[in-house]
Amino acid sequence: MNNLKRACNEFVDCLHSAHTEDDFRRVAERTAHSLGFRWFAYIGHRANGPNLISSYPKSWTSHYFREGYDNIDPVLQESRSPSRMFLWDGREARSAKSAKERRLFDDALSFKIRTGLTVRIPSTQNQFAAFTLAVDDRSLGLDRFIETSQDMLQTVGLTYHAHVSAKIGRTPLSGRTGIPLTQRERQCLAWISDGKTMQDIAELLDVTPRGVKFHLDNARRNLSALTLPHAVALALRQGLLP
Image 1 (cartoon, rainbow, N blue to C red):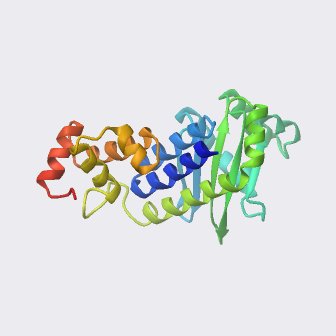
Image 2: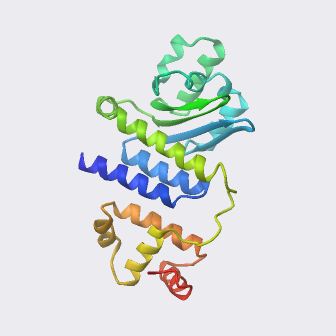
Image 3: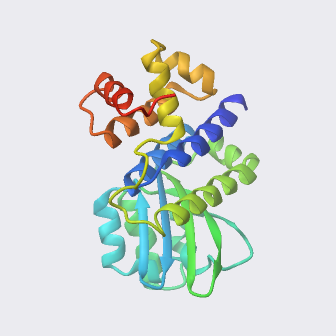
């Protein structure tokens, strides 16, 4: 339970530092792995079309949209229903409502996308979103985890949607403006400049070293630094560190 709580705390912490699609993809992919899933997918439907952020193979997502599966996918078609959690399995092809829906399940299985869960986001008018966690092999342990952690998994999906909508839906994807570092990124760089290790910082933040690395990698990219020491030097030169 402590590890689960830590993973969720780290997820929320990293979301605050995410600003681009690539940031959000890395946050969700790492969280999916820490929770025992292989892939994640977030799809938001707006008036100007779908927006997908996912760790699925690009060959699958390209095939998915090329075949128009987003128009018949039961997970998306039922996203306006009162139930927020939808558990699915590739074997549901046998109970598909149409030949094309059956082909969707069969094609997903051919890409080893076997089973998962989708958190449905409350919708308004023609806009809705869904957050999916998926695996290539179903297990009793995963089933039990999903059964006992549904509230937490729903919170993960809803929180992810809220941050994506607030940051990507309203600002250009090319980057952010103003101060190039978030408070957490500056804090991690400052501790690095004081000689602390990633493990030291992880203990101070109550996250994993991978979470600290996420913030430091973001800081390095946002400062256009070649290395972490270079990022510290640039941040100090620009007066960005406390």
